[in-house]
Length: 471
Image 1 (cartoon, rainbow, N blue to C red):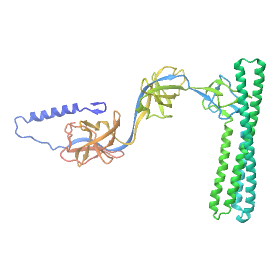
Image 2: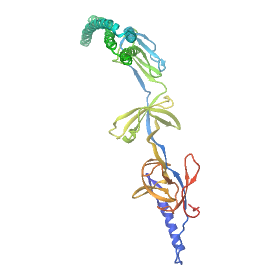
Image 3: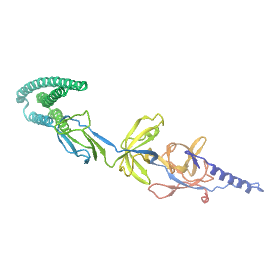
Image 4: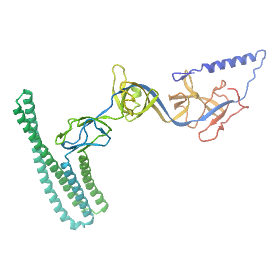
């Protein structure tokens, strides 16, 4: 029998002892011991590589539905909202829109800059070098002047925006202090009106700032493109010219992609299907990243938490699939969180997973059985579990060489009830004996029936008489 991953050869030793006793008894009254030369009939297999995956089971607890906080990446005035508390939403639904006029202008400017850079690149490749130098110098000077003007405008607008932001903060602080001090309604109304006026001015100036910033970035790219074009036309190799011009085009394309991405932030969608349980934005109100605009409770998704040892935790990762079972019914799940901190009381790490089941199928608070793959041996030497024997010196197998059994010590890895990983000791060139015989010892003559993957059963080299039938 095997105990804790080790083979205890009591049954084999008992059979060997009985056979030895039988040989002694049969020799009584005779002065001559007759030795048999029959080869031992054994099953064998060619060593090969495979993947061995071990699964573990854990007990977990179901918790309430997971909620997702929708926080906008852009801020500004809300122009439209589409869902209220209690409404059902599908993944990808637009929840609300933010005023995107400034972002659209920035995108248009980036697209114009890219078109201009592309035209300059085409012109640089088709225009004669000498005749183009004067024009390119003029372009550089014009682009430089535009760049300097855009830089000054950007700096002035930024300073104004920073000053106005301080005024907004000061007005908000004054309003909060007055409210806390119990000021009368007229005073609070006046302070609130001042705050709203400043916030509105700030919002308008912010749009202007975005436009000026886009113009400044465009002027920067245009200035650099103009300088690059002038330098490139002085070169002799057309291929080098194309490569360098492509760099400017890529810079302009990055600006376009960046502007497109920024524009997408002004239309806020839900990443999951579910129910709206909170809404904190309204038309003409401000949307900011300081608080969630919507809270969506996930639909048909429950969270399961379970605890594992550090060794098992190191085998798990986010998005890994698991199976959750309750009352004989299985549900698919995926790991969403692998804990980094150990529980001081249990010494274990918490794992969380999202399960595709409703609260009716997996009520909050119930215990469930969780099955997950843990240890994996990929492209490893895998042999039958029963082919490995154990003794004080270590684990070993019998290989077949020149028709004889060779006791070969091995280093083992992970194993299940049927197969075991061999880390060291044998190679894919070896043939191992997979059956047992009381006569199987190091050096014994064997007649091995070898099972080869993808080939017919064959006989390994053997010597001696007919193989023994009894095993």
